[in-house]
Image (cartoon, rainbow, N blue to C red; front, side):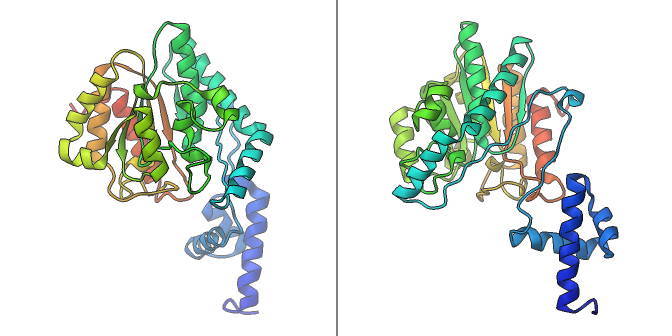
Amino acid sequence: MTDQSPSYHYATIARALREIDAAGPGLSLEDLAARIGLSPAPTWRRVKRLELQGYITGYRAEIDRRKVGLGVLAFVRVDAERNNAAATQALEDRIRSLPEVVAWNRIVHEAVLAELRLARLPVVLGGDHCLGLGSISAVARHCRDTGKQLRVLWLDAHADFNTPETSPSGNVHGMPLAVLSGLGHPRLTEVFRAVDPKDVVLVGVRSLDPGEKRLLKEAGVRVYTMHEVDRLGVARIAEEVLKHLQGLPLHVSLDADVLDPTLAPGVGTPVPGGLTYREAHLLMEILAESGRVQSLDLVEVNPILDERNRTAEMLVGLALSLLGKRIF
């Protein structure tokens, strides 16, 4: 059996799968290469092929939350296969029978609420934007407890304002802002309804479904698409956002795909024509100067799709700007 034969090829792949499964997420590319007798470059190509062909569907990291000082890190995603009545019904049935969707977001909710009660600024990392159900509902609860009204700045290429009836895909990660605004399946809205849609501003949007457009207009959500960003500039939009969302606190929910894919390739649903590096940082800097941001989501970072950790590093930089880091 030569190193060019099909038998050798399949045997190597099978051995790689066994090693990955046995070692878990801590196995580095170099270690895997040594175990299967290849150099890192061809090992990487084989692993990518296994991912693309569906043999490897994902990776899991087991974190000792006590050592990192966190409560629970939850990644939640629910998909429907097709856009038809039967699939929508099946999705709703799964939502009813999947307490995990609610349970995980309840855990996020309690973790964020605990930080707020300690007068800390919670930063929630993800994962798809569905986790905003837990974080924003917690901020809303804290606002009610302290006599304040929640304002939300949603930075995203998508509005995430679909319902099961309007969604072309049935993906729940395209619905969280609608649920938070009280629209969608009662199983979710009765738990996570949290915000008046008139107290929400969307910035950076460039991919909207027809049903979303109608719902956004009916709900009174203010939307700045990339058309407005190009025409008005980020500085003016930031000033208008802060004027429209007067008062404290301000929750910023930042989806990595609001950025141009050349800056943030590691996202599940990239859309060309997003915020540039300086547009994104300027927006964060102006928000920091306002002193009004009290909670933050950083979501839609997918390490499997990322290139040399560029997306994760970009969001870390934006978080630092939002927390007050300045050029001079």
